[in-house]
Amino acid sequence: MPIDFEERVMDKFDNIEELIRDLCARTTKVESSLENHYDNIEKAQKRKDKKYYYIIALMGIGFTIQEIVRSLL
Image 1 (cartoon, one colour):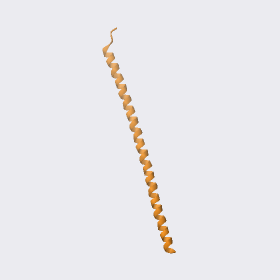
Image 2 (cartoon, rainbow, N blue to C red; image 1 turned 30 degrees about the vertical axis):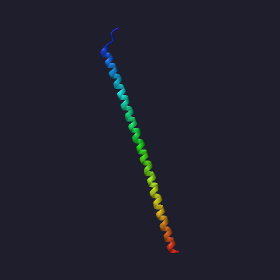
Image 3 (cartoon, helix red, strand yellow; image 1 turned 120 degrees about the horizontal axis):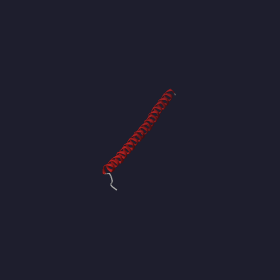
Image 4 (cartoon, rainbow, N blue to C red; image 1 turned 180 degrees about the horizontal axis):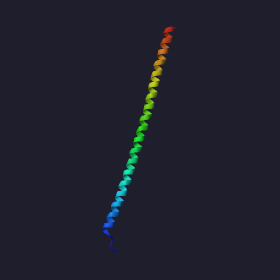
């Protein structure tokens, strides 16, 4: 039973090509997922910073109003 060497080699190349294609697809999916993860982290940090600045501004307004009321009384 002779085995066609050329056919075996081509089958192996096809198999390797499929594995490479699968690896590329998985890598692309991971890169996309990682990019989305970093975007979500960045958005969350911006929200935290925004809250912090609002609190600082409200404290400044509160202290200013307190000083104005204290100077009027």
